[in-house]
Image (tube, rainbow, N blue to C red):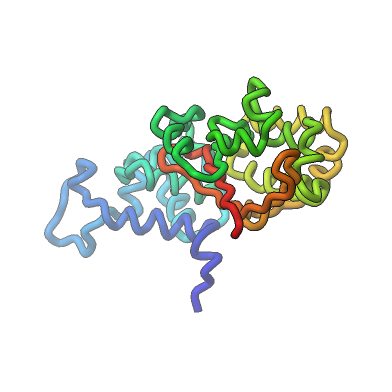
Length: 263
C-alpha cells in the first residue's frame, strides 16, 4: 500500500522525481551519442552523474531515497542537466528543502492591474506580503479599518493587531484572535525560512509586544483559515464577515484577503 504522505515529501519523493525526469531525457538532448541497442530511451544513472559532475554511487543513493545531504550547487547541476523548466526546478529544490540560489525574487509590490482588481471588490479586501505589510486595500476595507488604513504610512497587519490601540476595540474577542494570528504567521514563515525581512519583523514585534512575544515562544502553528470574523465598529456596531484568502498568480509572497458580509 502506497504511503501518500511519504510519496509527496522526503528523500524518497526526491529520488522518484529525479528518476522520472532522468528517464525523460535522451542522450541526444544532452550531447551524448545514442545507440539502437539501448534498452531505455532515457539517461542512465551513470550518464547523468557524469554530465552533472558528481559520483555515480552518490547519485544512485539520492535516487534510491537515502537520507543524504545535497548542496544547492549539486541540485543546480542536476536541474540543468535534466533540462528542467522553472516550475520543475522550483519543485526539486523544495523537495530537497534547499534554497535555490538562482530563484528570482518575487515582486513585493502589486502592479496597477492587481490594485485595480482589489478596488473593484464590493466587500472589504486587502493585499498582504510575507511580512503582512498591507500593500493595497479598497475603500470598503478603509471604512472598516478607519483610523488605521489610510492613516499609517506603512500599514502592517501584525503591527495593527499588537501595537495599535484601535485593534483591541475593533476586533471582537481580541485575545483569542490575536493568539491565533501569531500561530498563523508562524506557520507561514516556513515558506520564507531565509527571509531577513520576516526575521526582523518577528524580532521587532517581540521587543514591542509582550503578548506577541509570549505567544510566539509557545511554538503554536495553525493554518490560515477562513471563517467568521467579527468586529465592533464604532459607527456600524457589530459586523460579521466570512473571511476568504486567495493567492494571486505571479505574486508568490502576496495574498488577497476578502471579508464577505454574512447574511
